Image (tube, rainbow over all chains, first blue to last red; front, side):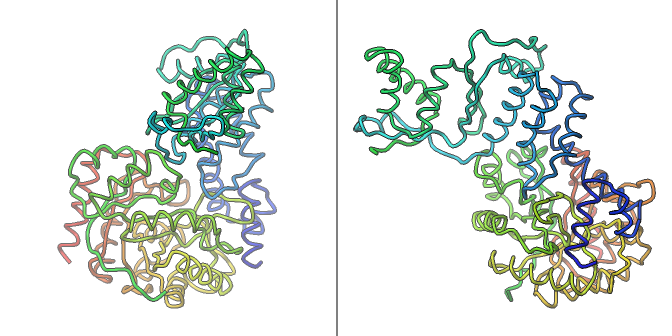
Length: 249
Length: 274
């Protein structure tokens, strides 16, 4: 067995614990078991650390079962273990197909983890806007910003769990909206928004055009209200440090 | 890569997040700290900010776990680029990783898996080390891992493999005394043969750590104090390699920093007796 074959066989052992792999590696069961245990225990611990509130929400047993399902179906690929929890979301969709609260809570925790180590960027100052040509202005959003549709009260569940308070029961929202996750300085932030602001931000994420945003809002709210709403959103996003760069296009 | 790493004979600790405040808010009596490289190979945020602050106070050694120097397919260029960016920013005392592999194809085990001590593996490891040292522009240190599996097809001992690796690549060595102890127990060799067999002049750093007793094997768990047998082996090691940077590694069941500093003072005492 050459080196490549040895490593492929070892991989087969780690992901499957198959007898044929163990025999090919010399059938040293005690040693192989140590590596097998290290591999699986590390991935379980990785998911537990990434999703502490989801774990509390589901309960230890259900969370562990979902983790084992994920580890069995999706061996890690990236050089960094930090990437592994990002793939948990699709598994949760399969394991809990009728629990949007679970999916959205998992998305929130994953987004917070990603925002924590996202690229640094200085928030835009009001002075930088003074001489801007708004018709051609292109706004760049914080690299830490993550947006997702929100159909449940997962944000309230997360907040309660984060504060070690009893979590409210899961509920569908009367009107679907969105949730934003980003980082201000070194603190990750979470904010629910209504559907219009969520879509407006998605619009801006697309091409960065402030004029395009105004046009999009005018089409929905009318000329006066659309322009006014664009101004309100811009002020709010600036205040929240969601906009980090602006150019004249 | 012929430029060897500067000799540095201080005593240090692994920087873990449980002790960030101690290192940022107090004057911790260490000569250097070691960090896990991958924890800081991120785009931004608090980890990089903290590392920059710590670097202003202490020399920093970068210790990696994911280079996968034993991979049959070669190294990951993206990994090397990210590590290079961190090296350029931190200007570390040492850059080290393990004589192990974790990546095979698209799979990454995130564990320090054993390299079979064969001529073919030696050729591959040496080629990978050349690639890494070229990419990073510096001499690297490689650590002997704990192992739980011996290979019937091995054509040389671990120390013969390490000696050939160092001779052929110019790399330097991070001698993990606990790992020697664990592997010697697990595979039934004499730890002194290992210490006698490696090129002592290539050792630039020593790790000390605790281990635990598994069902049949010793496990390199880094979750307990250094045991007396490892302290004895450390004394024998520094008698051979001379004064080199020494640190305590603790990754689990982290005690208050004072407890680790007490362990480090024991290392200083052993070093002073040499």
